[in-house]
Image 1: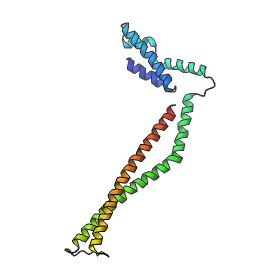
Image 2: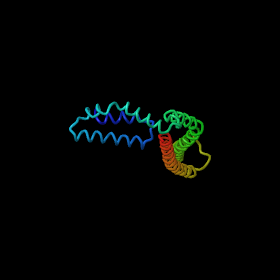
Image 3: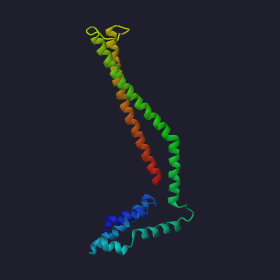
Length: 186
């Protein structure tokens, strides 16, 4: 197998180790490939001489277990941590996330309704002297036009505010997800 495939499989087999340890091991075996290439060996021959990445990973994991006999199996502790984080997120994070998302969607809907309502108010008020419309306004046409302009301006302002709040919200969600990933990896 070529160097890239060998290193990928070795990294996967060592997934339970911390990132810095995996990087050290990867650098060591990358050097084996460089030295072997300088000596005229092919990547396939080098990987054959090194042995399977899985067996090397087993050796490293066994050595790690000997160094830290009191340490709980890392893969099991990661699994337990992932389950706990999932439960915490389901109980405490999903509710507020959905609530804030619903409020933002509501702001967008209200802003669109304000713009449409304001536009219709202006149209009805402007056309009422010329066309017999079954809709009668309880106030003057000027008041209806000003109300329509105000509703449109309010709708646009609410839409812009909702847009920036949504950007802020999704940036916070992205930061939280990255934090959770780091927490799980380490």
